[in-house]
Image (cartoon, rainbow, N blue to C red; front, side, top):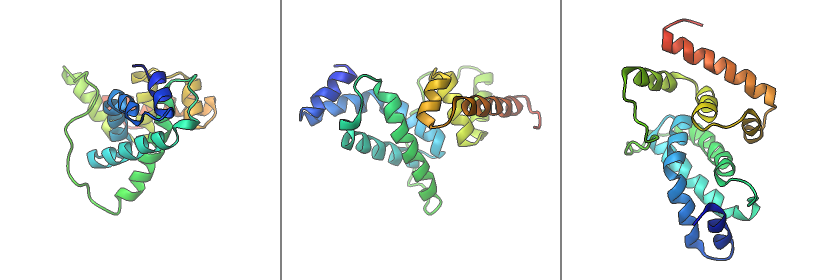
Length: 171
């Protein structure tokens, strides 16, 4: 079953069809949420809430578009809410590693992961969306609700900060 068929079936009353979307995107969503929230438990909570939001608002989804970019906006909003709430409580415990399957195989890749983890969530988000997810500037601008030029400028500075962390330079 593809995403459009899952959405169509779900809207027709087959609630189990939504499981296709959860199974297909859960790992990816958890990895993104981990980057945005900085914690495993917060990421899991944000993902659960975002999938619930997606299910509840599925009738607003434009089936002519891809599901994950639409879902990502819901996830991103939930992650930011979760980060605000996280200051008031500790994490409930670690989750299994749900990062993208391409595990680092070299010391350089480990350095990149450490540098990404040191970036602000907003910088990390831009780099992940552009360079790991392959989103265009226009897609990023639309989903992040900022002008294309703002995306380009923010990404430029995020790359500079990442480069500085990787090379040990100070900005």
